[in-house]
Amino acid sequence: MATAGKVALITGASAGIGKASAVALLEAGWRVVFTGRRLELMEKAIAAAGVGPDRAIAVASDVGDPASVKALFAKTVAAFGRLDMLFNNAGQGAPAMPIEDLPFDKWKAVIDTNLTGVFLCTQEAFRLMKAQAPRGGRIINNGSISAHVPRPQAVAYTASKHGVTGLTKTIALDGRPFDIVACQIDIGNAATEMTDRMTKGVLQPDGELMVEARMDVKHVASAIVYMANLPLDANVHTMTIMAPKMPFVGRG
Ligand SMILES: NC(=O)c1ccc[n+]([C@@H]2O[C@H](COP(=O)([O-])OP(=O)(O)OC[C@H]3O[C@@H](n4cnc5c(N)ncnc54)[C@H](OP(=O)(O)O)[C@@H]3O)[C@@H](O)[C@H]2O)c1
Image (cartoon, rainbow, N blue to C red; front, side):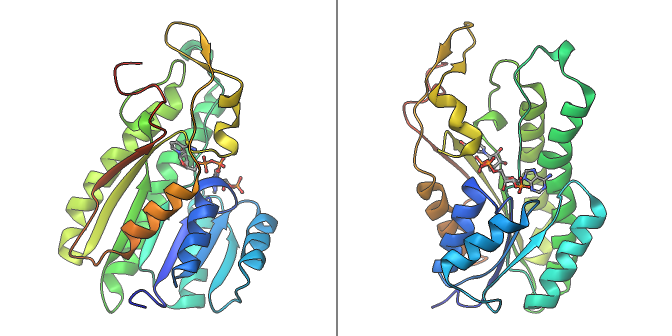
C-alpha cells in the first residue's frame, strides 16, 4: 500500500469527526497519533481498532496550551520518528447568546482551542516537516460552514472558524518552499456529540428553532482519507461536505 507506514496526528480524536477519521486512517494503513483531553476514550478507540503501539498511540493534550502541544509532538517523534499529516480537528463551541452577554472565559476557551490550537500545532508541525527526510507533509484544518457564514449568536465560534481560513491560506503559501501542503475541510452537520442538539432544534436568523438535517460522520472520515492519501504534488485545497438539506445554500 502506497501510504503504509505514513504517520498522521489527529487532534480531537477522542470523539466525533476526529475519532472516525483516525480509525479510518488506521484502516487505510497509516500510523496514527490520537490526541485529545480524554485519554480513556482514545485508548478504547485504539483497542477497538485492534492495533498495537506500532500502529497507534493515544496522547492526552490540550491544544490551547503551548507546553502540552510541545510534549505531544515530542511523543509523536519518539513513537514514530516523523509526521506526514496533521489534522487540526479539535474544536468546541459556546452556548448561543447575544454578543454582549458572552463571558470572556467562554470566548477564550473557543479561541484557545479552535484558533490558537491550530496555530500551535501547525507551528510544531512546520518545525518537524521542514527538518525531516523526506521533507514536507500535509496539514488539514477543520473549518466549518461557519468559516463562510455565521449562525445567530455564535460570535466566538464564527470568528474562530473564519480565522482558521486565514491560517489555511497562510500555511498554503508559507509551506510551499518546504513541500508543506495545506487543506481545509468545511463540514456542515455531521452527526456527532457537537450536533446532537440539532435533533431538538437550532436557532435560526428569524428567531425560530428548526430541526436540521445531519449526515453520517463516516462520509467526513472517508473525505479525510482521500485528502490525506494524495501525493504532495496534488491537493484538495478546500472541500465543503455537508448535509444537503441543511440551511446554507439559498440564504437560509
Ligand atoms: N459536527 C459537525 O457538523 C461540524 C461542522 C463543522 C465543523 N466541525 C468541526 O469539526 C471538529 C470536530 O467536531 P465534532 O463534531 O467531532 O465535535 P465533538 O464530537 O464535540 O468532538 C470534539 C473533539 O475536540 C476535542 N477537543 C475539544 N477541545 C479540546 C482541547 N482544548 N484540546 C484538545 N482537544 C479538544 C474533544 O476531545 P476532548 O474533550 O477529549 O479534549 C473531541 O475529541 C471541530 O473543530 C468542529 O468545529 C464540526
